[in-house]
Length: 305
Figure 1 (tube, rainbow, N blue to C red):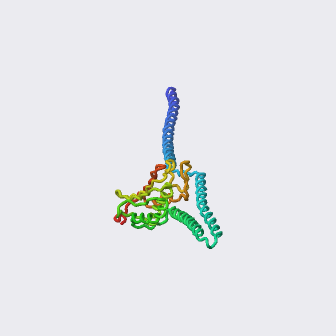
Figure 2: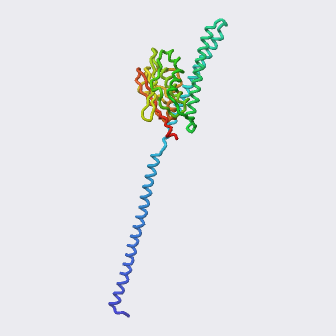
């Protein structure tokens, strides 16, 4: 049996060793727990940052859902405008056919008068259907378009010839200003003809009752060719200028002068300009006149090759 003092030392040592062991285990547990929490906290922090990045990407790429009520209203307005433009000439044709039926065979003068009106109204209907067909064609994004080098001066001369009689009846002087041999553009000649004739038609439609003038000006600058159609007509109210190329827009302005037409002409112009990688601008002073400016890239054979 060990001495009393040795026994007391051993008795005191073992509890101390156990306490130290427990303390070491506790410290190790704290260390490992801290490391585990730090690792998990780092993972949570990374996930939080990624979620924030995803939210930012979603917000930046979010597609704005259009207002279906405004789309429906625009569609109904467009349908109303087209049906109105169709019904008016049809009613006129019907009325004048009835008048022709009431004429005696000897009244050739009245026959010719009614025939002329019917012919004009049928032409209006034909123009409307052609505009709708062309607009539908231009709306097809993947539709291939035949292109060739086009002399815009020749196109403008064809437009002046086509509109000369109508301009003359309204006492409007229609003329071309520009170089005799301008640079060419790469495009669809039929569509470019439609572009310019629509601009001229719009200027004639909104001319003053006393007549006036319409200048088609062609100029070149750097890599672009500029077409300007300038008139001294009734002009466009300032609040209507941002919307003149919209298909369904009708001015609510009390100062606007309403004329017959489907409103498709400038919408078609806008799409043709976009088809040819160009741009269009409008300047107008209400009561004084309007200038439509079209910029088109000049045809460069080397770049095409």
